[in-house]
Every structure is written in C-alpha cells, then in structure tokens.
Length: 285
Image (cartoon, rainbow, N blue to C red; front, top):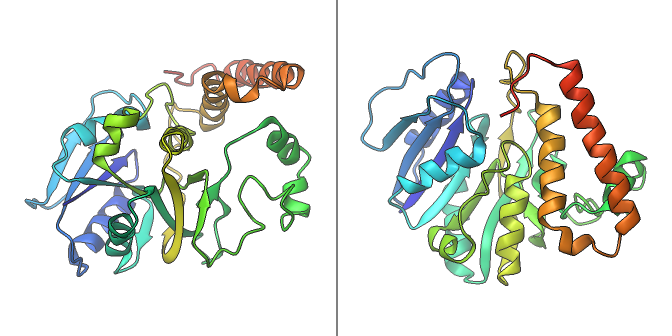
C-alpha cells in the first residue's frame, strides 16, 4: 500500500481538485490519502471517503512536522509526498511505485515537474547547495551558462531532462520512498519549517548508499500556489533560515571553505535580520 501524504496550507481549491483526480484515476496499487491541514484560514470541505484521513493541526509547526505526523498515521509500506497545488498523470503513482519496486538501490524517486505553461521546472532535480553554487546563482551565471556542467550544476541543467538520472535531490512536490528507510535515517528534520527539508532528507538517504532517482517517464504540473501571500509566514525569511540551518547541519562538507563559509553565513544572517526588520508582524516560528 502507498500512503499519499499531502500537507495543505490555504490551498483548498487546489487540494480538492487533486484529491478528486486521484480518486477517479485508475490506479493499480492500493493507497490511502492522508491530508494534514496546517491551520489554514478556511476549513477544508471534502466529501467523506474511507480512503481519506484528514488531520487538522491547531498550530502551523511547519511542513516537516506535518509530514512526520502524517507518516505516524500511515499504514502503507511506501510514502508518496505530494503538494496540493499539482496535477498528476493517470499513471504517475503506479510508475513511481514500480520504480521503487524494480530498483532496490533507489532510496527516493521523483519525476519531471512542469510549470502551468508546460515548460520544464528546473527544481525537478537539484544538487546539494554549496558555496560555489551560491556564488554562481548570485551572479546569475546559472542562467547564462546553464548548459555547462560548472554553472548548471545546481539544477543539473546540463543533463537531458528526458532521461533517468541520479541526482542529489528531487522536488519535494512529488517524491516517493519506502517507509522502512526511516529506520535508517530518521524522520524529516523539523528544524526546517519550510524549504530544504526535501534536500536534507535526500542527503541523509544518499549518505546511506541509496540512489536519488529522477524518473521522467511520468510528470506532474506544479502550479505553485500563492497560499502565503496573505499569510503571516514570510517565505523569503524561511528560505534564508532553512539555508542557514542546512549549512550549519552539514558543516563537515564545507570545512575546506572556512573564509567563504564565514562570509556567506554573515550574508545569510544579515538577510534574516533585515527581513525581520522589514516585516515586524510576520510569524517566525
């Protein structure tokens, strides 16, 4: 069985459309749907269905916390994480499931992600962030020389998007893994409120010797919900906070970049400070 976990925050319209689609698709594998609502402004209005388990959080403790809560309530041997603001193909779930079944060395599997205009979304696959990559992105060299291995490293833009590839991380908007892998690496790190929780998870899986597989045989459309626009949660702030946590957590990988590391940590902390000053009424939990 696959436990499909969807974390919702102010995306009920997208969520209802996705659930309706999943329930009407001819999916061969058995599944359950676990919806965790992170204290949205409006309640979710769903028709009762024995395949759906709905969990309401009184406080928004972040994406990782919600995922862990969903996993704790799951019955499946595989976990499929989906964003509510996506559209899946008829065979997406079966293809992702069979990819795990047919490749025991796969730890996490993701698929091709498209924008709403059907263009390729580069976040489909990612390299672990490094200080060199941050420099490349800061000077936008990844936009100019995206076909080169040096400057196209972060999103693997030098690779064929239509071929299976083994990467550092896949998009958290659609990723599947075996539940028993959690006994080896632990749950999602709840210090990551938003952003980098999928990168952190994939890194820990890869450290155990498993492959992170990008499988473009199937695809999803990611609409990128604007659920945070009227929220007290500042996405830019959370991005820099999570980036800072990530670099601190994996400091061992950056020990040869002492001065660059110090500089970027100062820049990241400065961004966090300025964002707090600019948004005094924003929630920073």
